[in-house]
Amino acid sequence: MNLKINTIAFMTAAVLLSCNQETKKQTKTTSKTEEVKQVVTHVMTKEEQVKLTPDQVLQEFIDGNKRFQRGATTTRDHTEQVRKSALGQFPKAVVLSCLDSRVPVEDVFDQGLGDIFVGRVAGNFVNEDLLGSMEFACKVAGAKLVLVMGHQHCGAVKGAIDDVELGNITAMLAKIKPAVKMSQDFAGKKFLKMMNL
Image (cartoon, rainbow, N blue to C red; front, side):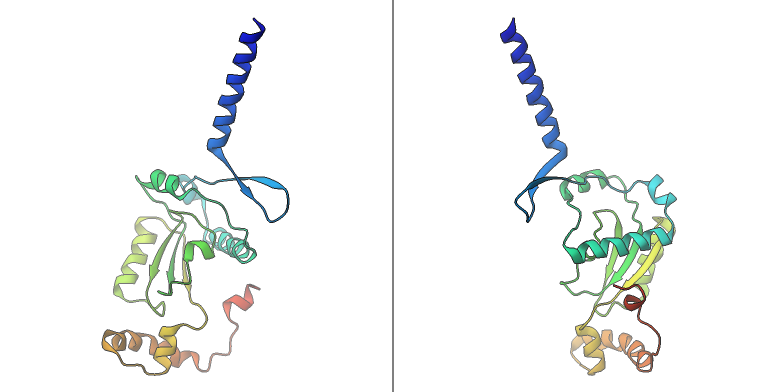
């Protein structure tokens, strides 16, 4: 009888351990202790998206960027997020970013799959195609915020300043040049300095 109870207790403990391992993964921290870090599999729902305000989304991006800068980003199970978002997407925002491969938008704001639409073009300018995509993101899919994200040392902006001419790049840079000209005498505060980032 005692053996039977111990076997049931062992099997119950094994099942609980197995269930626990499905929801949590262990990761080593830089300290000598080991910590269990929750792996996020959740994706944004329509109900959650509807409740958000643009100010809340912007604050989430600011907080996420601070985590990114500290190296404390959220651990996510992207495979599970892809599976969960297969039947619909309800992003919080649309971000217009540069083509630069060193600026991973979701990572920079510590967001997961399905959280943001990302439009990318060298120099992060808007043309008819990107504007239509942004309209879709907001009017049809319900995104709450449009954010244009530039970065330092942008090759496209430098190319526009230097009057680079090369194939289709020439026409693309012509679309950036008006902004370069407008910004030459810009006396206002830059967004990042205003946000203390």
